[in-house]
Image 1 (tube, one colour):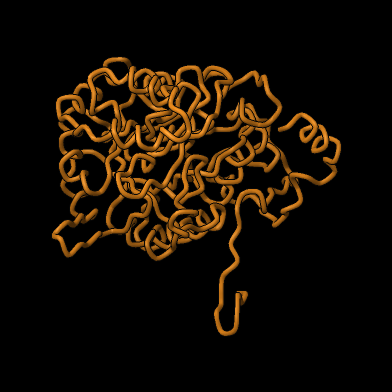
Image 2 (cartoon, helix red, strand yellow; image 1 turned 135 degrees about the horizontal axis):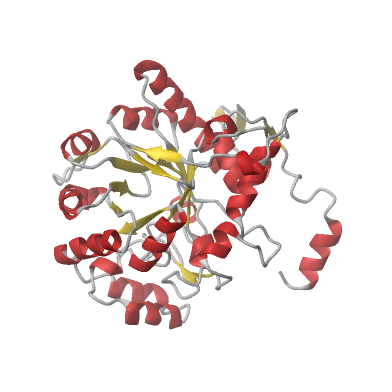
Length: 385
């Protein structure tokens, strides 16, 4: 514990850039590594979840990611369920200038969500061979959750900037996740959370998976606008500790998904070593040719009518989804061939499974990314990168 002033203690927390993984004394062939993980009765071959953002997931992208072994989450309160054909609006969002984009987002997201489009999108993903995983905010989950279940969704993610077991309001609006998980016919995942106490309550409420992270995403400005958040490595470790206590009490293991802050393949390995079973990725997959954002990326809170907590960022288009996930890498910044990077890191740490990788040795090493890299740094500065 440190002190930020007289009598005011503050806990030091750590992000991915401040930690590193230590190679094990016995290594494993990366080809022998098992990357699968499980939510409810559904197994996914890859521990990568595409963010529930309109710049990342639409129906074709969800199908493509499913076929590659990952999970893609379709935002049930996004453009795909507000408009029968949102392609023209996505073009406008990509073409808007910086001073126009927030106002334009608030305009296009003003149209109401349509129940028939919710059912249609889920059917389209399922009919295309994908796994229909959908998300809703706590305010809408009570209505959209049962609708999605009836339409054939496989999993529901109830997601907001910060989620607790029960949200209360003097205006009569309330959501009990305990009641929702008990009454919904499909597994209910929840996010986002960063503390031990809140995580333990959510596990006890019956969530099928818990998403961790407040504000670390590339397009998220919650930490700046609200001043709220916890460095991602520490947040995952704290939630994993709550998961271990819950498993000790009940015998039930609940997967954790690290949501945000994943910029390169090494961050995925670090997130799993901290205790995650999978990672939710936004900006990296927004760079895919199949992504609906046209080379741009924005968060779910960006169009908020009163307090936007996100920004549209240009990420460009660097390759196909297969390139980004499986390579071969065409760039040297760690943003492609994510799966092989994870396999290699796990092999070096002697882990054959994700559960074994959660036991890898972690050190505090903030200088590791730049140690001995003077020439690389100088070259990038000279290139304006």
